[in-house]
Image (tube, rainbow over the protein chains, first blue to last red):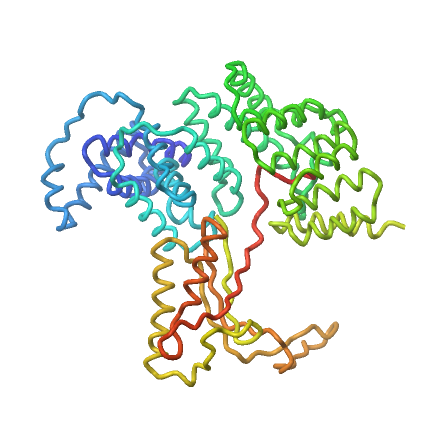
Length: 379
Length: 139
């Protein structure tokens, strides 16, 4: 049984229950129950109409739950009659679910958890494993998130930008557990892109595809990071790169530039270079200038300094770096790299060690420590 | 989201404001303290921010490898060891500010005279997995 296909039906099934009058929180629980039942029953007895089966079972689960809860007696009377389908949906139900689960009243972690469950169809256990927290904690996070959005009208138009931020976070932190969160983020962004015509949605999808394409080459068998310049480009996923570039080009052609499109453009220039030496750093600097105009983010300026160092030489890079706050994350790592390129190896070694000390994750720390050790070990 | 370790020390932290050893509290004050700690953990479970919490015995041993074919050497405890961990709590929160806020609340646990202990707690971020979209210029 294709579990991803099954999970892709989640949002539309959930939306049908909500349209029939079920409240969001109860409907979401019922859909989860139906998914679990499908995983149990379908391998031996696959239904002809998968979605119809899920709607029927989820609706029955919802009624069972409602009946079992004496305190909800009144709601039962409300919904136990044959449901009226209501007027044809003026808005896309699945899209509305994305908006609800990324509602601005939710904290990022709550929005992520709710999106993965209600839109992605993942179980609480899978989400808990992915984020390395106990299942009870994740269950509480999800039910709290549902209470937070309980008063939000389902047909309210939402802000695509909030949804994109949530999907970006899922992708960017997606590493652990038996669920591939990066792949899941791509699936959810693809599903969103099919429903909403917005160049930044396309931009984010392109950005994800272009980074995902390099994933196999980014890590050595021992788990250590392989820098972009040293990656085996033969291991990049050329299909994903081609798709990412095509999506990006179509988005850019609409002349409504945004942050994700600009980031994707930079990723595309890296992906396009047959060798590290052939990277078009001049164009990359131009895109960083665009990004700086779009978001005045110091991290962008830091990365721009690296690009300037490649395009115009390490001295120019160091000059760009000098204008930035030295307390920025990864400032020491950038300085170390530029000093090494400039031939000042003792300074570079010292800065690599300092950068390792400040590294926010283990892989980067080990990588930077190795850089310091490499320079310290020179004859 | 990020995980933080809140560390409580038997020894090694700067002195608390209300710095009276626990064996000199009244039994009621001890009960109130234990209740506060339990309630704190329960509240974090409800907010979906609790990961783990454990207390450690004050007595421990030092162990080290002693060469091929030999059993490990054990020694200690050493009185001169400056740092002694009493217990920890792991939280999973949206920001560093939230981690500090929670550590502040934990430090307000009641002690002697029913007054907050104001003890110093150490807040240490976990090293995470590297982000997929790297911000590191070398990768």
